[in-house]
Length: 115
Image 1 (cartoon, rainbow, N blue to C red):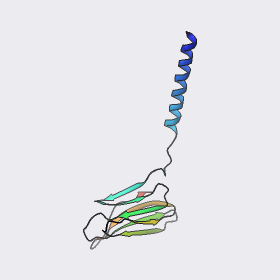
Image 2 (cartoon, rainbow, N blue to C red):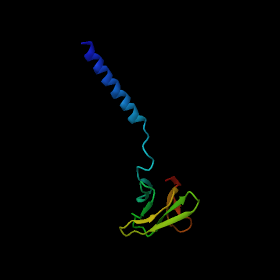
Image 3 (tube, rainbow, N blue to C red):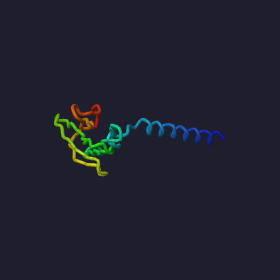
Image 4 (cartoon, helix red, strand yellow):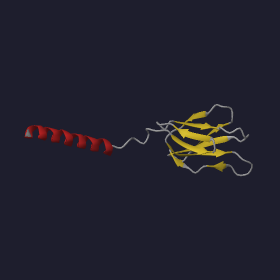
């Protein structure tokens, strides 16, 4: 009878250790899309951090553009107009991005978000 109890105890301990390893293992930062929204408009950076998309979802005659800063400090922009098609562009080593809407006077932009 004691042998069976020890076997169950060892198996249970193995499950606890295995669970701790799964919980303690970090998930890669690039395993998700990152989004930023301004009203219905949005911008995303893909999970491999190689593409960015900008989507103008408001029929308000205001252009929308996304800006991406790479790790060299260079800014690139992707523009979109309300036509049902999101615009996508390649990005290299993005560190942060934001979405802006072109307005008369100063453009309305989200804050910079880490990529």
